Amino acid sequence: MFGPAFLISLVTVSGCRPILIIVLICFAMALNSFCYSGYNVTHVDMSPEFASTLFGISSTVAYACGIFAPTLVGLLTSDGETIPEWNRVFFSIAVIYVICGVFFNVFGSAEKQPWGPDDDDAKLEMSFLIPSKSETK
Figure 1: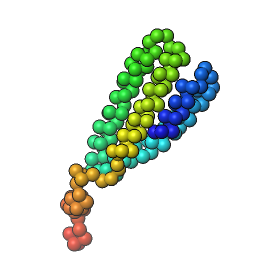
Figure 2: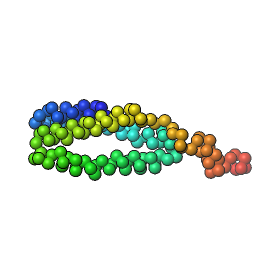
Figure 3: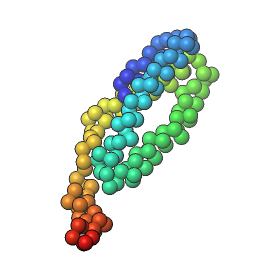
Figure 4: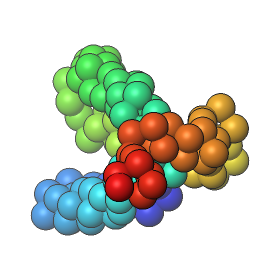
């Protein structure tokens, strides 16, 4: 989260150099893609039994930001889409990256959660589904 924040913040000081801005944004999104490899499997690590529910909840919250982002950009660039206004947009993005990165580093964990079923519960449930060797003879 901090790599993309750094590169996006460089956009704010790059002036009006479109090639440089495009390169910085491309590299920022490339670094951002590393987050998704961990994000997609964290739900299974936390609670395999509730991974789909956890993924649905977290994705709903994450993708809801996409609804509000165009409105925020419209508010930040309401005076005519000048370079300083776009700098505010990119600076806001960098700040959001940093806040989310700090929040995850302080509170985030992929450890198995105590509210998920125990391994013994899962084994007991599986014993009802799979017949034992003595029952198959």
